[in-house]
Amino acid sequence: MTTPFNQPSALRVLMTGAAGNIGRTLRAHLKGRYALLRLIDVAAQQAAGPGEEVATVDIRDMAALERSLRGIDCVIHLAGIPEEDSWEKILPVNIEGCYNLFEAARSQGVRRVVFASSNHAVGFHRRETFIDTMVQPRPDGRYGVSKVFGEAVGRLYADKYAISVACMRIGSFRPSDRPSESRHLLTWISHRDMAQLASRCVEHPDYHFVVVYGVSNNLRNRWDNTPAKFLGYRPQDDAELFAAEVLAASPAEDPIAAQFHGGMYCPMEFVGDTQRIDGGPL
Image (tube, rainbow, N blue to C red; front, side, top):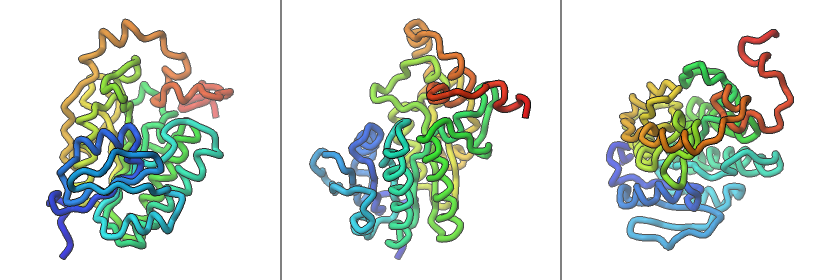
């Protein structure tokens, strides 16, 4: 009998990239929540506790991925290069590895994938515009391109192979669990809100494909997160609590970064004309 997703104590969940910053945070918050939490990464991890399994798996290795996904109900896919980098690094992990994950999930009968996308998939939308999850992809770098790719693969596997897929466009997750620059007052997500969002994506009883923003209840938020409300996500934290401290310590934002949702990724290697982006001459 298939376990309903809204019975978390009976679910078998696998998390890729479990040794990363978000992975370690989710592991701590989700400990004991599921019948099994299987944690995979190429990096070293802490030893498995009750209800956990730890394994060294490279998402570039399809056979190893397939073995690790046997008997799993849902995957939280975090593994990947976590920031802007060269194409030579992005391609094998964020592109090929992401495809491998979805294909291995299909072949092993996994019913749901929760994909760690990023706000950088839409980073070149102007910050003055309040955007929802239906806006055109506007990646602000190669990392953002890889997240657009992951969302597209997720859409394909939802539509063609009936895998339930959620794409979390994560904002600014900080290991310190506090915003540290002015843009974070819009985009920050706290650790407990990140864990709540991930668990809502895992445990909602039924959805086909959904895109949500990974952002806390920030006063200055510029993202319409209506689909997250459908999932039951109710963020508890607000970056405004840190506003005075952050603004006093933050230097002036780069003038190109300040124009767009993607912030500092937008001026990297930028040689274009900002006046020709959204509303400028064709």
